[in-house]
Length: 121
Image (cartoon, rainbow, N blue to C red; front, top):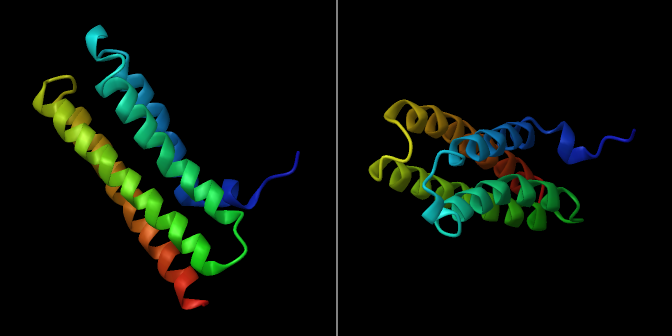
């Protein structure tokens, strides 16, 4: 089976693992949040990896960097949802800290990859 370039990126792999963790976490969210917080945090976390994948298919490094910017923005949206989930006691302090740590690493990786692409322009 062919492996696409985005699948080889550690940042994409880490974002993918975060999505899986978010999906597991949200199973314990209140049912009345199914179309609210649960949906929002799943979509924003998924967008992190999706934008990384989509950006790798672009021809110019400037376009690739643009999609990484969108990926970073989705990471910030996910962080906002995590903070609110903690405040609402949908997740524990430990779950929050664990996800935040993973998210911070992903953000650093996104920024480093973006700098790399922009240095090639």
